[in-house]
Image 1 (cartoon, rainbow, N blue to C red):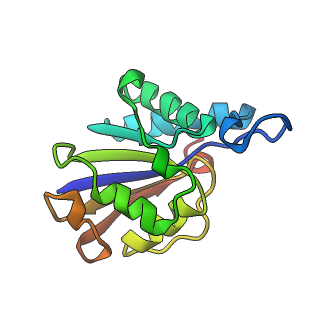
Image 2 (spheres, rainbow, N blue to C red; image 1 turned 30 degrees about the horizontal axis):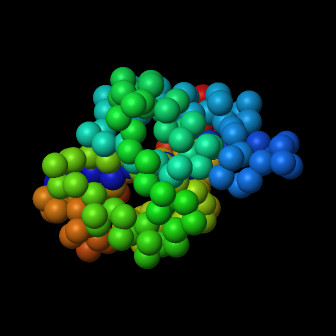
Length: 164
């Protein structure tokens, strides 16, 4: 069985006009919500085998803050440039290429693609995932390339206002 955690990055700041979209940092709420979600995952005794993040500053910051709470080493976070700007097909391709040695993966990305990917894979449908929300899916397969809605089981959906 494979387990996928799809995590939308935490709330980012729009206060710095001089920064590119990829350089936007988390705002105060994002810096609070990301560790709160990490604690919520740790409370469920979750520590993924692999954390994969978009290279955008807001996504990487979210990944680091969440990973810290789950005791996942931040220097082991894999950066996947293709997550930034990916559409659903692009993100599914990244998921299907994950190493089969990883039984559980936390993938940190952006909306609308994270929500659309959750809907493409889950038997449960979601409206727009709020920032720092996570959807957990189990797949009845040993190969990431076979992960699909047909072998998926919805496990949980959580978000900051639910864990405060």
